[in-house]
Every structure is written in C-alpha cells, then in structure tokens.
Image 1 (cartoon, rainbow, N blue to C red):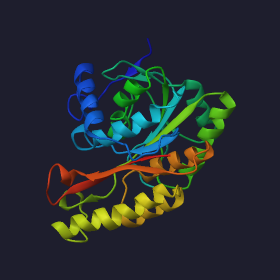
Image 2 (image 1 turned 90 degrees about the horizontal axis):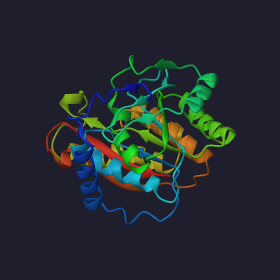
Image 3 (image 1 turned 180 degrees about the vertical axis):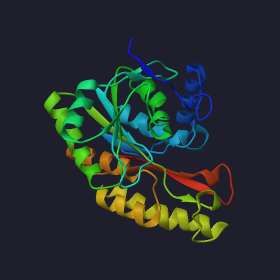
Length: 284
C-alpha cells in the first residue's frame, strides 16, 4: 500500500464515509441534469471547490461528463490558491486518502513534469492544506475507479499554459490516456473578502453574475487561457486562474475545439447574504 496524504476536509467540507459520499453524489446526479450539454467525448473541465453543500453538484456533474465515453489512465488536476509570484507545487509519490479508497499518484508522469519545470515538491507528510484539489478527489475516485492522478498547483502567470501544454506532450510520449481538471471558484464578493465595488444587495449580485463572472466564463468558454488570467488578476473574478488556464491549454493540445458551459451558480443561491462566491462548471 502506498503512503497516503490524509484527507483534511473530510467530515466538514464533504462527507467522511463512502456511504455518505455516495448518497450525496447520487443526489447531485439526480437533481442536476446536464441534458443541454452535447453528447460527445470531453477531455477536460473546470470545476468549483467550495464545500459540497454549495458547489458539489456542479463539480460532480462536470466530472461525470468527463467519465463518459472514455476512461483515462491519469487525471491531472490543477488547483491551489496562488498569486503570480508563487512557486508551482506537485506531489510525485504516494497517494491521497479518500472515502472511496486511495488515489495513487502517477509518479512517472509527475516526475516528467518536474524535469521540465521547477516545483515545490510536497509529500504525504509535508503539504499545504488545500481544498481546491482535495474536494474533487472523491468524485474522481467514484467515476474513475482505476485512474491515477497528478495533482499540480499552478500560479496565475504565463507558465500555467506552458505546463498545460507539457501535460499533453508528456501524455503522448508516455502513451497514457489523460484528462484534465482545473479547480477554481469565481468572484469572492462582499465584506468577508474585502471586495465590494458595487455595494450590497441585488445590484451587487447582478453585477457579479452578469458582468464580473460572465466575462471570465466567456474567456474560459473561448478557451483563451491568457484572457482568463488577465480577467482574474484585473477584476478579482477567479481565485485559481492558473489552474483554469492550465486545464484549458492542456485540453486544446489534446484536441478540444470548443467548450460547453454546464452550469453557473453562486453561494448566494443557497445562503443569501452580502458575502458570496460564484461557481462555474465547464467541459472541453
């Protein structure tokens, strides 16, 4: 058995047991129909990473769409809350604990990335507590039972697209079928986040939904990683724009030609208040 990185957020941000997780997942699948999304093979996606109560349904249904048509060997998942000057992060050995069992790192793939880029290498004992990747792992294990993973933290700068392209190149060189996921929430609005340019109330909610979040969603849907990062840094419209940019760049290199918006929502929908966060699900 591989040495495992413990599940820090199980039992709080998502259920701690397999039975409870499966019950939630089945409810997400039943309540969140994706019938408007064309029936085709998807190679990548964007998911939100709030607690399952708020955004689990969107993340679950994006990952379900990725699981249809083809089961990959490896899921590369990009995430982490980083700024443009942050180092890049990766785990190259071991695995993650999930309620459904262990998710093992694809070491050969991860180490190939470290040969092309500098990374801060985390271990099962020494790591940054991070919800952006961990909250997707039960979904990945549930829908991709035999897949291995490569978890990568990418800052919002030009290197994120280069890493995405490298993922596509390495997958081809190693002969591995790969799908990619970028984990990011959208605008964090209100006094809890120190960002209230439109005050409070309905006007603020409408601005986030119809302007600030809409612009970055359109950039994601246009599969334009540079604009995604620019929008996020200029307008505070995504917390992990590097992760989204890397997933888009990788998807394009793996043949994706268009995006489908699965769903948009915000925490206000479930918990109205002056502070709220936007969420989008997109597949490529």
